[in-house]
Image (cartoon, rainbow, N blue to C red):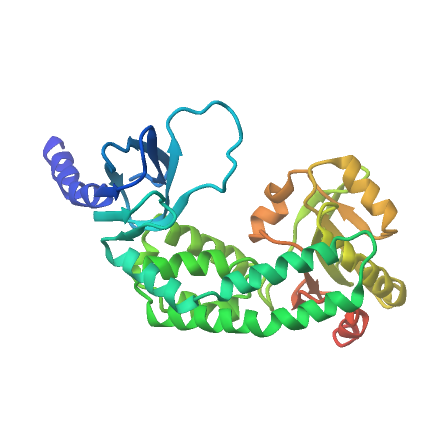
Length: 375
């Protein structure tokens, strides 16, 4: 028995060793000055968020440690002594991809403007950054202008539509550049991270497979790869054609089961009182409900609120007469966790047999869209 245990342990050792990947970072910031430290935020060999630091001495610094696979990491340059006052300038930091290997950081007096080189993942990231160019900055600038107009007390609908039209072609170029990189680098940790951050807010399993399918076993075996697979598997539960059911507490504290509405068409709507786009959709939902409620149609609102007062005030203010449920756990609401809901608004329509027949129907034409399915 003891010999078998030792043999099993010996077989495990290579895998353990491989997961604890050594990295070394050598930096040179010739004009950084005195009293500065470099802080590294990264994931350690167990996949946990970790922080390390090194003093800049004679313009040089070095850091070393263990990680596993490649993942986003941040280097930041700060003054060693902090008097508690807020910095007058923006944070000086650099995003890069950390994995096993040796890195060189070369700059003058700033980390954000320094060049980080050294590994395959970082090389991929530099290629991606070059490929995207200034498109993300352009889109962000338009988004900031849009937010000011959209969240204004008095909405300028004409300006909102103009900004949406201005953003559309830039967004299309960003998506094209993103897809181009993803499909050309299926064995890259950068690709894995881009898919996880840019393609999973709302997963349509049928459309998502073209991104997930080509990923190599190497990247899918990482911490982030396993998380992506788990999220994808959850999303498959609410794919078109799947039967669904759940139990949740309603706004009066009574248990409600979705299958209690069996025999009806039901739109399950995930929303929250603090979600502006969700609240903007509520008039469309109300219009659809009033027109279709006599045609075997119901709505179930699943709130991702944490405050019961905020939740019920929003229900009252927006005049939502349909079933409302929530366990007041935010995005950790049991139903959201079960189906991998990490962005709202989202919804799905089930038929009288409890089978999903449509997803994410919204907008001013919601009523007409629902009529295509409700017979």
